[in-house]
Image (tube, rainbow over all chains, first blue to last red; front, side, top):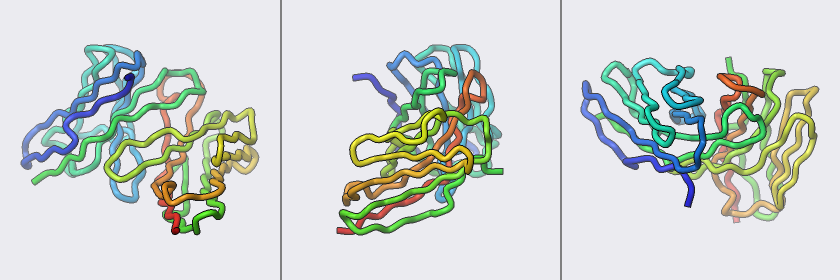
Length: 114
Length: 115
């Protein structure tokens, strides 16, 4: 079955630590995205990548970093510089730049800073 | 400044009646609009979409209407069922590569369908 897999589903982090969220897709999509969901805030774009070895900042990239070494994988690192990291993180993929296609989402990772 | 606005945070409807969820946008370069449904602690799932060259798209109980002159779209669910209870996100994107092709989401509307 094709889809997007995010792991882990729940993640706890101590303040001051970096943590990496995994996102893997087997849909053969070139574009991948990371969103963050906070209560009452909708989905806000953190980073996106239109092609392997290239990525761009979204609206709220500060305190985050990504890599795109393989088409299938787009891991997100939440660094200690992110001031309010507790949130629900969603990864998505799509066919880039062709208009009439939807993005497919993973099941999300809930990160809690303790 | 929000480019996609869902001004109603919540909506409560009786089972069997119509649910109407509204969405407004400000960017005239948007040419494709989508609705996603989201349950708690899960990723959004695609529901229905509409291209800017159309004013209506229907899929079973779900119909999306687009009014380009008013920069407004709406999702109609008829008849509403308790399983429709979820948060609905409106999203829009422009044509082309780069950031124009990214989905811009509204803040969502929480729909509650009461038996």
